[in-house]
Image 1 (cartoon, rainbow, N blue to C red):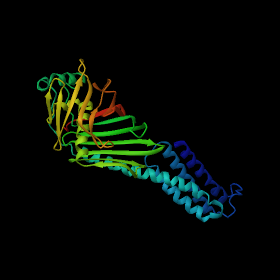
Image 2 (tube, rainbow, N blue to C red):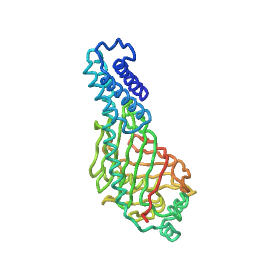
Image 3 (cartoon, rainbow, N blue to C red):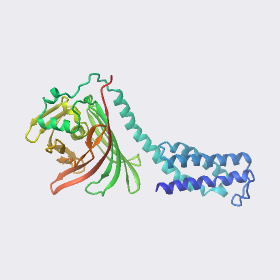
Image 4 (tube, rainbow, N blue to C red):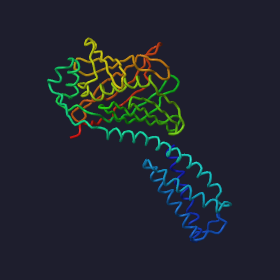
Length: 360
């Protein structure tokens, strides 16, 4: 699909050279029966150049490619109107390019909301006191958590105030088959915030999703072409559900935060935990291997918005990899336990995690 559209941009742009060649009498263009002045020929060349810039930016995945596209379409259409008898069919190409450019524009606007929220959250990091995970700190924790922090190499490190994670994988639901996605997310801990942005394609069309958990509110907004709502959820149940996701992120992606306040370890036999944020209290169970690694996280406090009720939820972790001296998960599944059995609705491959620490 990308290369078809790229070909359309290139071919449509090249056609504008006919007007330039006619205006400067560089060739006998029989397809253009109307006279073309040199000034008009320069405008035809300008349209060609703008379509060329558009094609180059689109081919290199530059997010603002739609800016020269709008300029190229506008100039091209004005020229076509002026030579309607010869060039009217160019309107079809302009209309096709316009639809794709508008989709890119709306997707950019939608993603910009996420980026603005990330910037605002980063600017609110005010923690100046650094806590180092020492043996004295570890002594206050259950043995399983201590072993986990040592396995992931967080002992001796500074407690993070946030992180950024980049992932890719595939998702589905009970009525929709697997589709591929990429995600980027930011979590901040002093003021519990989780900003999760997903890019995917369904039936060849771009789909964008933004999960926002901040300021005591939570929402999910999924849009086709960055414009048409596909699924939108918010409210009390969504806040409770995303509090589970937020704690799950701490356990899996930022174990160094397990020494912070807000976490209560209730039952050490299977390490049942209680976590609180934004006046929401959720429970989860952590399961560890003998080597200290976490292999599963389960909770009954997460709602499946498609199912419309709370279901047992788990995120098994098969293994870990070393990144900047810290062990991070390589992969994770997300599973709902339906009445008729478990259903894996997401598979995540963790590409990279970067951490934020208290400001000096």
